Length: 109
Image (cartoon, rainbow, N blue to C red; front, side):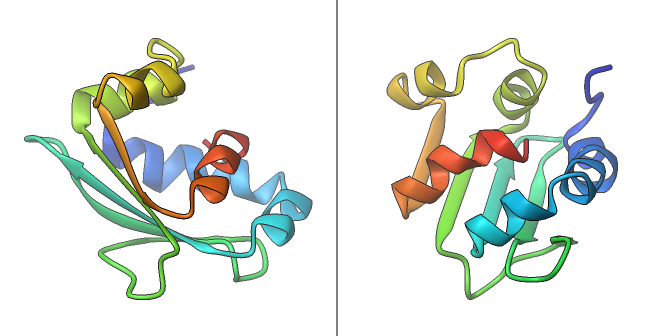
């Protein structure tokens, strides 16, 4: 079942995925910042330095990788309707910071 909203991704889907992947979280060991624009967007941080991972609304000053996208594009990526690499190449997905961490994102999205 796909996510219905960006809020849904960060409040339901991502916490569930993080719970099932403690080894992946330990390997990532970094903080992600998500800045999602549009009427259904917002800002969230995903802290993979915490045991089990921690998803929180707002920004994190310690983020090593920042993801910027519109609400529609982000939902399409999460729901498998838009290839993340194609979104990046076409400018729909913007990454700032550690590109290596960005590549690991698909393991927890």
